[in-house]
Length: 392
Image (tube, rainbow, N blue to C red; front, side):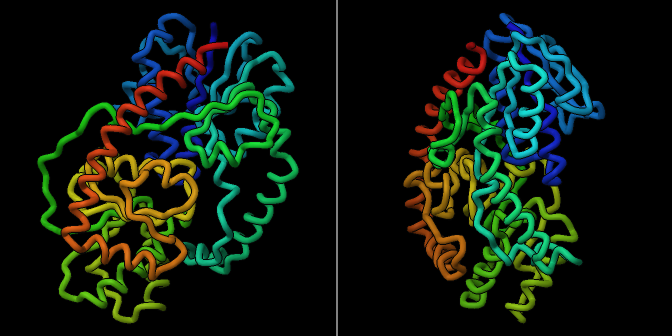
């Protein structure tokens, strides 16, 4: 059997969001890692589709992409490939662009089987006018965001069922996504529990930051809701000026940092930048170091298809302060303290709750128990997923 694995769209997504390391990136690499260590690559011809200008971002990616049994195809588009009719094309990261492209591929290769992994959450996010504060210039008016949101709502409403009917198999990583996909033209759908790169082993670091800090990841993306989280954190600091805890925010470009700071100053005239530490793009290894050193993870996201940072926090045995929306409770279960992401007071109360050592200790114990369960779920579900990908 011939199977094409689309790494092209994976790289394209990373470029669109401006981050080499993100949820789609993490999940795709882990899946390829598990496929490499299965028997399937030895039994079938596996083609790995890559962009023409592809260059690996780290040693781990190099190790995956350069796997000796992968037959590499470099292309400028998935549409340029001359697929075998009796083959399978698997797309690990399906967004709107990929749905449109599969529609075109199927017209040209009607006998090609197409499998996709989809979260189905981007066009389900609520409209939030505060998203404009992450930008400068014309985007700061909010007009482009509103037009884009309304346009996607209408476009997906009209075309979604047609697009998704082109897939022979759909895989999703949460019951939330599964329910969002119901009543669509889907031939086959399977749900599995997604893992992260560290799911089968713990990475240890010797470097220790002397500061006591709360970790917030992907602060540069509006859907992650860092603006409200910062405001809640500063409200907490105003009430507890002697508390030395800081807020570390990752993956935030300098321009976005400046826009966030400008917006915060409108609400908090006593804003002290020393209480917040921004990071630009950081490596996966650096992120894991921050997970191991933080007090807890603050995950105030407005919506997720899964929520890998929660999993990473649990793997590092760190308590999680998380939104109660979309798929997030499925990932953390009872091992997280939940907040309303749209309510600043709710986030602030959550921060205050975890400043109590007794509460923090209690959730650390819950996280340890959740960690053992997750490891087993990931191993079991990944085996099923890979079997479904390679079975006709």
